[in-house]
Length: 239
Image 1: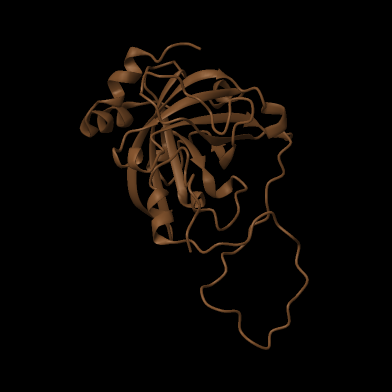
Image 2: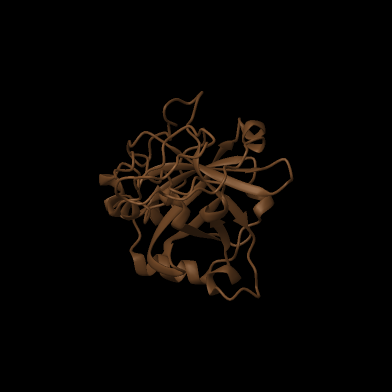
């Protein structure tokens, strides 16, 4: 695999004000140049290391209808210039925290959308209780005309308000080997998190469709993890 670029290593250590200026001056990448590839990612906040999500992989693909989507994969948390090793294994990587990829829109009310590609986790087909749904990532080019190294700005959004932001980097890594399987993925129905507390008495249980996992309650700690993109809540959400 190609080595991590010197520019990537430099930006990983750059101060936030430098990244602010770079993001403001950046241009949107070409979505078609992203699909079919994996990108090695690095979350800038130091807190991401404590959560075990500083390094990650983003994969981009198109579904059977030709719409661009993407997802995240956890990786070994080794040194920055070491290999990005997918978990649980290279042959069977975990794919989760899916997002819809939307091109820049010069007429958008959201000023970030005007000059950046949007990764919308709320429209990625994740389960309703998945805290990744509150994430919105914006991507710009680091080098004009090149889609190999991108700067991302992540927000988590509640009730239509952006509550926090952090920067991350992604760099083209390798072709996506399971693009066909991802293209065939069936997006999940939108479900509601169950309210806390016992089920009210006297209510008749209605037949329900079985799902792979029980509904969970979204906790404050889970929302805190959502401030950092990439692996996104790789640990189980506690109620």
